[in-house]
Length: 193
Image (tube, rainbow, N blue to C red; front, side, top):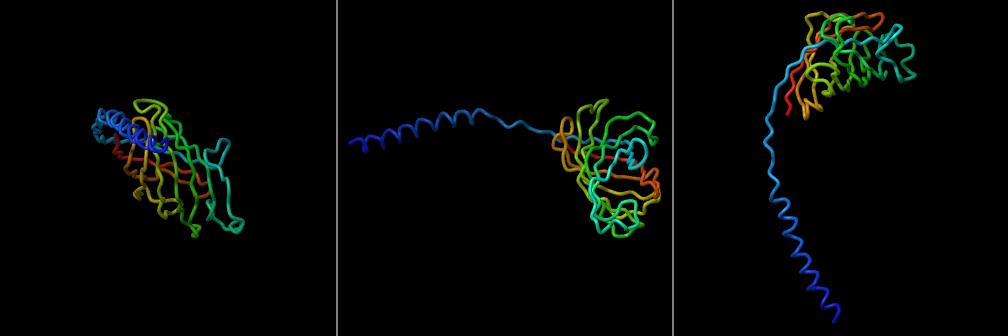
């Protein structure tokens, strides 16, 4: 007799709980998201040597010890590079690029890497917001022509750049093959919500 009573009560419970959950979901309306386009222009400074380096080698393969190159194949670097409004390192700092990159070139005259970096802004309209770059930096001479423009992918963001996607166009403004110090001009186009 008890077994026969359990089934009807189970059915009543299942039928009673359905409208409760259905009512909750019925009242939720999706919010229309409007895509925005933001264009940014700034300068990035990578400084692996000196008294206050912004990039440090954190790992490298033993087989590349004697390989002559500022960034031997397989070297992994951590970075906390300043972003400025002008091409000089002494111009106003607006944020920093924190992340890492791994050098991939077998050719000592070229630089190739895969980058992951979070470009965070610490002043101005986008203070507290950032976008994420995850892309391959194509093969480039260590002292590239100022006319050479490279493209990298933007894959995410937070704050004002929530759900960002887009691209960054990079141009070297200065580069030193001996030290590895480099400054790049960034023109970024972001699509975000």
